[in-house]
Image 1 (cartoon, one colour):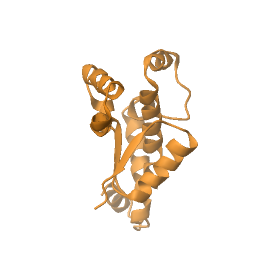
Image 2: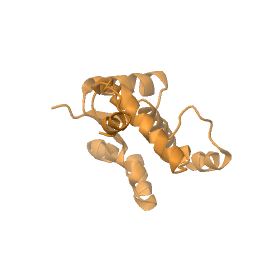
Image 3: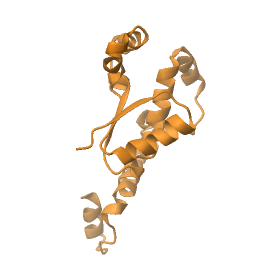
Image 4: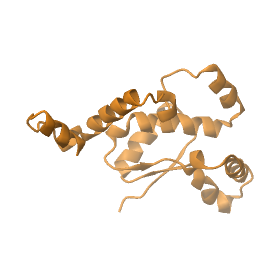
Length: 154
């Protein structure tokens, strides 16, 4: 909708298609971040950017599954334009500190029957199987990250 408004203001022809929307959204986000002075590290995890010293101290205390989770989330955010459908990031990252610790404890002390339930907070959910396969090929097969995912294709 914003692109239509922009083209109308400048009296430019509508020369974009639905395939351009992911790039347009990224461009608009960058414009907003620049105009409102939002630092990039608060907006998305950048996998290619080396960690800052304070980030290293925190990440040294994190279990490997959480480090892997953050790396995978960063890759998903940086490559969201590659996916056909939506991707729901793991709920773990939005939990309060106490709930995060509880989720990690459940995962460590879980019995076989309750394993799927313990993995829930760490689960990536994909709308399409093909998107999940691209994600797994990169994060699990290439980078050997310890991640969990499921497809909710209808």
